[in-house]
Image 1 (cartoon, rainbow, N blue to C red):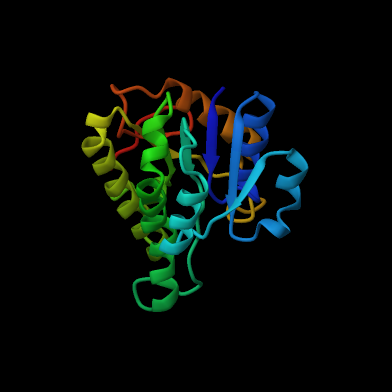
Image 2 (tube, rainbow, N blue to C red):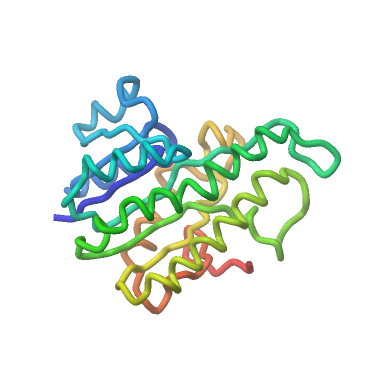
Length: 224
């Protein structure tokens, strides 16, 4: 049976990933900062664990809790759009740094903490949810903290794909599209269910030959 761990799983895309993988018969470990408030996750009957992706102690505690538990697919989904002030002329620096902690360093922290779990899994797939807004080639400006954090995440994930290839770990770097969530807003053209269904296909298709590529939810390559 496939075991999937999802960060930031209490709402939005993460919650839909948990719901869909559970419906498909996978063992789901859903993480969030406040499990006691994750009513929707609890209702799914999945395993819920505490994790703050910005806190090394929290990641270490999760690794201890999950010691010897194989993880086939690790989905680094937790994300943050950043502070209100994040443009070229003005920036909320504390908020800017928090955006990096969540979006860039968070996936790396979790991947490192749970690397042994991935190595003991059969699939050995690490999935990071990035954004097309992290593409330097495609940038239209604005939303500087979010764009920069996702560009940094792309580099981190690409490096992991290269450096962990020798361990058999494959890395998917996926843009979920503009999705109707608390972050994406109600004007987004894509539902979370549609995005997740497509990304699950991309995860299923992940193999050493496409590990480390920057792809959208439909499998189209995005320029770095």
